Amino acid sequence: MFIFCLYFVLLLFSGVSFAQGTGSIFAPMVNEGHRSFQYRMVVDPNDDMNEVGFAQRLHYQASIDGDFRWRLIGQTRKTNDSDFDFDFVQAELSWDLSEDEQPYRTGLRFDVRVRDEDRPNQLGLHWTNQYNFGNDWHARGILMTSVQVGNNAASGVTIQTRWRVAKRLEQGQTLGAEFYNNYGNSRDFGDFNDQNHSIGPIYVKSLGSGWSVLSSALFGLSDQAADTELKLWFTKKI
Image (cartoon, rainbow, N blue to C red; front, top):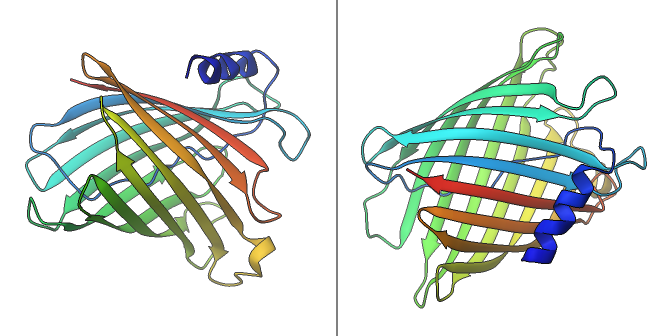
């Protein structure tokens, strides 16, 4: 873990450009009384311009009750104009549709994303599901849909799926694998290599005092996907 964190720090000082994906495979569960903030960074060691791509985001979330949770997100990216160029702000509302303690959980998330510089804004509706097996295994799947609105908005619906299989280990650790699929716009999905598909391992470690760290590496399966994306996220429950 120390070597992985050090690698990220070195990449931050190596001259980075263009934003990478900071999305997650989020769970449907909402826990009453939950509050937390999180810092995420994602690095592409060799992006489309043969440079190091980088994005970072900060979010705060809090449950309203046992069924609803809100979240506010701000994200920056490195571009040719700025080291910390504004990417977007996003507001989200998650709705847990299932009963507690059931093995199968399901829920919805609604989000609104706002950009600047005549880039289109975005509205999203996502369906997330999780099945909890015995012996601390779980599987999670998400169907994500979004549409663009405002200036320069494209028609059609962007469709994604995301998948995770993971096992909770001893001492607050989780180990698993994740699979991201962005099929593109419904007007023309194209073939597999025109889409964005990636897969890789994920590791989560509890650090104590409400802190945890997530590290992940995604490897592209299609031509449009980055060859490698490295993720490092720090979460603090408050």
